[in-house]
Image (cartoon, rainbow, N blue to C red):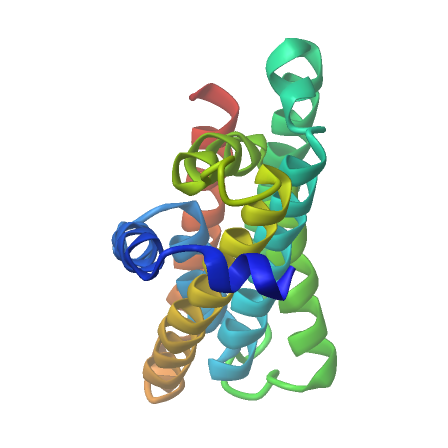
Length: 207
């Protein structure tokens, strides 16, 4: 696969990462979740959420490379089941954030970091729209004349996930550091996170 990675033209990498960067900085579900996690749990939680999201994206890439993502297009019931599962999970997160009265400036630790990572991964992997996007986006940059398309999808998808991880780690860390300096805001930051999670749930369920 290394030979194939070297065979992909440099211009393909440049255009791919340029398009990917535009996606990174466009406000969406993953970005809002990362920011909300950072505001609620601190910089470490925001970065952990970004790592979870990056791993979720990589999961979608592997699924797309294996061709399983096509099932979401073939069987609408599978798409809907995954979509509603993701929406239900986000609603649970919204309720948990709204009712949690603990101090956001003192809760950052190993358990909260792991929780943010797990939530980021589940939120992303349970969003079928990410899988369909990966399935539609990555093949546009693959060239069958160079080598197996599925291997090119894995290579480009890995770059997509790593790039998103880097950008969202910065965003999540910044959100956490900014929130940590506003102790009086601990209450409404939790409420704001709940509103963000609830809005993402509604968007996922009805779009």
